[in-house]
Image (cartoon, rainbow, N blue to C red; front, top):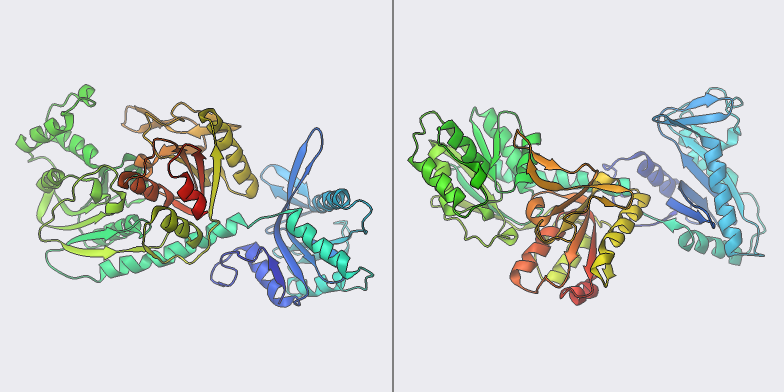
Length: 550
């Protein structure tokens, strides 16, 4: 069995996790002998006085002969042209052979600069297109022995051996030097797409367990309180329960505290489910009941208690009645809210209440729910082991870790002056994009409120425009965001959501070491599904705890 670098790719030994490159890596690992080394997702860079160029090679193979083979994998359809095989990327077309030769040239150049006067680099190539059958190999302008297509893909390893197993006069020292070159000089990085795909599939599979437990509970009347830790799948359980209630002919009402979460749930829930925040629901019911409310005073103290009093005193004959209530983020609700919500429920309404006391960032008391059965779920299915270990050690927070994927861990970047934050952020975003993450995979999350964050007026980080809430709403009461692909938000608004990469900001002197801050950090860190990054000012009281835990 061949050695692979890096060796910690999630899903490599899980055949149910699929991706074209991952399937090829499994094949190479299983079919090539032990003296072969397979470097995958190899990123190179070449800088001169004017330009810096970046590229990626799918696989580099070498063995103890001192020869090197570059493999370029192209999935999907190709086009045979007089210039060679061409792969289309939208409106852009790339000649595969030229791409391979360019990559080889950069590798040669980098090796010669690092080893002046050293041995010659013997490097060859192979184009692997498992989804396409080359019709006219001569017209494609490529050596038949260097193309493995759909007809010959079963013999990929045989092609590699023929190209690499020729006799060589390379010394053991030269082979070791080459091996170290590919490990250190080139940026050997994980396949980001495989990490994301593996996480999504494993998380989805694990989450089915909690839904199955709830589906199998039977008691009358059905009043269930689920206390679940971050990553236990409360939101997914919410959606599955809504579907179950609809199938039983019930009319579900789904309420949460957080507006961004409500908007997201509204997008993905069945159209038969009424989704709203608690305040949004009160506003809607007040309008239906004909209660006059002056929303120009919405920011004044006592506004919502006054609306609630008017609603309780109103004639609610024309307002709807729901036969099912699901509350997400129950830790943020007040006891009086539940009493008002019950005005709009049928007498036998099914009720599911989900909460996590560790994410109680508002300091509210637990809502008493007499007659409810309580189910406690302490398993975290979302957070990978490398991030979970950091959370447990740095925050002292214990939970059952059920996701055994490694993830890409935690990275911390320190800065000394507040005016350095935006530059540091822009650099990190650029590096993440180079590593293969998309802007939509990244969420920059502040540990402070939107009014006090250092990024409250930031519209752009480097070349990337930021998408953040402006604090305003359109005529349909939709939140207005700035135009951009890179999300910035606060943890108080981002609760209940997740992203492959979370970058935490505003880690500064304001974060005292106390229980409230611990909950804020715990809630924020558990949003990351693949990679967690901390941009931390040197004055932050948590700095040493984080340093010791990295």
